[in-house]
Amino acid sequence: MTRRPTRAELLTFEGAVVDDLIGADVKLLFVGINPGLWTAAVNAHFARPGNRFWPALFQGGIVPRLIDASAGMSADDTLLLKQAGIGITNLVPFASARADELTRAQLLAGGQRLRELVAEVHPRVVAMLGLTAYRQAFDRRATQQGRQENDLEGSELWVLANPSGLNAHETAATLATAYRGAAVAAGIAVSGVIDEQHGVTGPR
Image (spheres, rainbow, N blue to C red):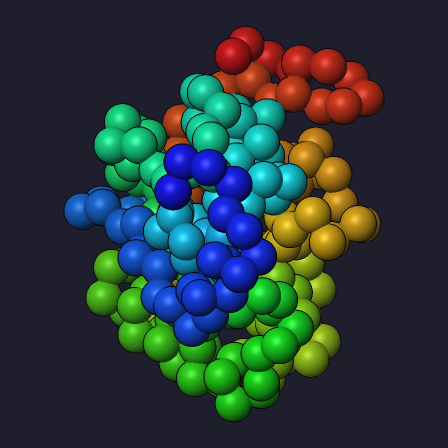
């Protein structure tokens, strides 16, 4: 879809499934809560304009260029991520207008699905992007953001903030710092990070 979809068009993607982006050697697996309707429309993760996932990856030095997924992922961008060892999936695979529409049963089922996927692909680090969703899906009410003491099917587990524009407590810079920490732990080759207050730290 090369133009901005209408609301009516977006609603036709309610319940659609977005393909996982997973290569042969996943070091860092990012896990969204569930796809939004725009993401489903273009079959590309975190595609809605205003979502801060891709700016955070760029600012965090995790990817060398800013990826624009709003009209879908290019073959070059997909290859870049796979070669870097970065994968993307969702806790709940089907799309809805808002993540808070998901039921507890759907989140619990998503948690089991994620366990099975992680056991299959064996990433070094799993980065769950959504604290409340993680708490509900895995029945861990006391979880705080950051690296967790418990692993997930043998993979190091980080629970981090969701990059949606609705998450007003975070900026692209704070997300970049958090996501960079998970990337470093996973062995991803990172470059300089851009911080809103301090500028660039280290070479890019």
